[in-house]
View 1 (spheres, rainbow, N blue to C red):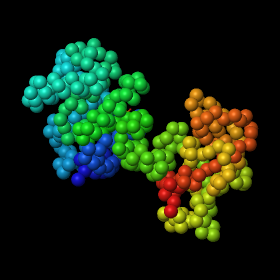
View 2 (cartoon, protein in one colour):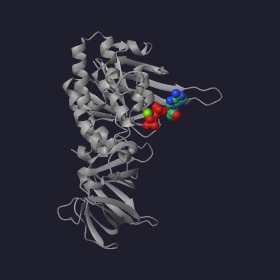
View 3 (cartoon, rainbow, N blue to C red):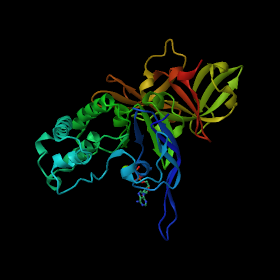
Length: 383
Ligand SMILES: Nc1ncnc2c1ncn2[C@@H]1O[C@H](COP(=O)(O)OP(=O)(O)OP(=O)(O)O)[C@@H](O)[C@H]1O
Ligand SMILES: [Mg+2]
């Protein structure tokens, strides 16, 4: 049984004189016991709304939210046994930091020495021991945020909901705390839902990531699967830095083989032809037809530059730009008017306009239907 289940959950904000705002649209999701997940997506995509419905600070407009077997739609927040760190911190100004963190532990009648021990431990973990006797209004945003996070993490609960809990911290501290928080959650087997719009953070923290766009859950999968098996064009373009190359192409199904052809801009010539080999290597070959409009995807890191020997898909192009980023090169290759971005570890000693050989490994290629935008083939899944 799942620790948390969202069953066709929607949030509709209704304001007088305005059209209804459907902020969360029929989201289905099941989070396992002890699992750490993230809701990931751009500003306004419905992450906080989803979390607040689970916590009970927003009503559930449609669908059902369950914690274990219990339907919690109509329970008050305090009856749900859920701990939450809010985007806006929500600390008690008249209480010291220590008492803010201890508040719910003392209310649950935990013995004081045990409370002190827990507060001290979490304060050390989040590097806020020096402000335990301070009052919230005197703290910086980053300090208030860590106090809010500490208060949520020490609370005994069935579920922990953490809304952008590190957004105010500088990158270095953020990376250190991220590692410690993850260890803490695993050690205590805490089922947790993070909200973030930072994919590096989501990947580092989560067992699985729920990618949201415009209120719709696009895919809920492990970081590896989101990279290797993006369910649609949105996820393919959203996950991964720099973004996946996506080129408009047509399928060619001939003699039991599957090829994808990218036409050159402005004329009928072929800019790029890649082969997936025998059609029966493709898991859902029945969904494909000759001439089908598709997008061909390949991640910039997966293309190798200058190597065409022993390559199933060797390609010749022209160097369009060459940018050294300090630790890697971003190289643009012109293929009949389309630009393919390639990322390599070393510096590339080539001038603009040079002819360049490339290899597109079949296992790194993806095909998406251009109309439905759904994934058709992932090179990693070829038989
Ligand atoms: N209390 C509210 N009343 C009316 N509309 C709201 C309310 N809260 C959020 N919305 C709207 O719902 C949509 C989703 O907002 P939400 O706060 O869930 O997004 P988010 O993904 O958390 O964004 P961010 O990354 O900026 O925090 C937005 O269009 C927002 O304007
Ligand atoms: Mg939010």
